[in-house]
Amino acid sequence: MARALRYIKEIGANFVVPSAGPPCFLDDHLFSFNDFDRDPVNTFPDQTVFIEYMQANGLDNGRLMIPGTVGTITREGFTVEHPLPAKEVQAIFSDKRAYLERYRARQQPLIDAQKASWPRGQVDILASIRDWFEPLLEQADLTAVGINGRVLIDCDVQQIVLDFHTRRVYAWNDEEWDYRFHIDRALLEYCIIHHEEDWINQIFLSCRFEAQRKGAYNEYVYNFFKCLTPERLQYAEGYYSEKTAVQQLWESHGYRIQRRCPHLKADLARFAKIENGVLTCTMHGWQFELATGRCLTSEGHPLYAQLIEQPEPVADEAREDIQPADKETAAQYIRTKCDHCWYNPKDLPEMTKKSN
Ligand code: FES
Image (tube, rainbow, N blue to C red; front, side, top):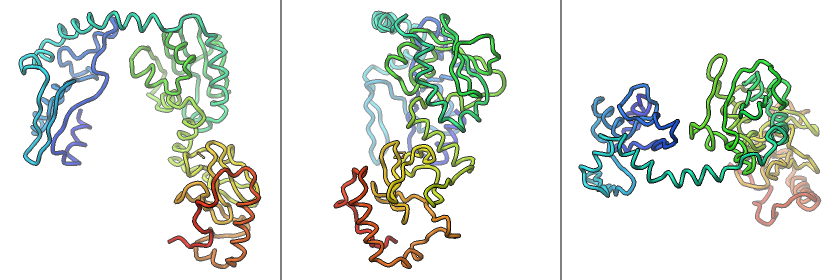
């Protein structure tokens, strides 16, 4: 709450509508996570708690909104109209336990039906996770360094190790683990069947898991479970790479080239294909002309590429040394000879046009 308050003050917010999920927990074993008694250690304070916290810190511009509330913002202020009489709105928070128990009773048939629809025993969990994760682990250089250990996934019927040392997934055989998650088998099967690429949203934010760790909280572990496709993983790897500033460049075809794709940061040392002076990032197909660094797919996303013989990067001015005719010929050559190009050359601005 202190951090949110700091942000509010820093941006000088005129009004604040506190809103953060999850709105409530209805599963029996999670029901106690609801903020019934303003316990300061509860990590899920509701709107009224935060508005009171703001008031205690000298801000009275918080506005309570519940589902169905209409807020009207004018030059004069921000008014709210609730779908219930004020007394009933107040009762939601003053007698929250009773309110949520009634809500849970109404929702129970839906919850039961939803849980009954979860798959159970339909999936070979180990084989599925191995086939899915091992190719990701293969690419997860910086993630593996960041986790630097074993993650055990325990779903009662199977215990599975994600080994970030060996980049392998295997059945647990009493090896030491560094992080352990206990997850209902049905939830795992659901994520596998639906190929959920973000387990943070599907599993962890619902709080339907238990976790243990040896040592400090490690954001790399949770980020990995958020990045369960090559695209997402490459984005995270690119982010880490930029943060750590290691191996920013790589070399190929006589060029020293920026390591991360200007599109969504794929590792070009793995995903680039170079033909006829054009680098194609095979992650999504963006293309770049190595001689100039120009992106052929989208304007304004140049790639750093430097001829290895040249000691300095090729600046725009330096490129004027190349005769326009040569540039035109080269561009024509690339446009007509590059058999994997899917972009439409007619849509491209002139190659010889100097950008500022
Ligand atoms: S990351 Fe999308 S084309 Fe390279």
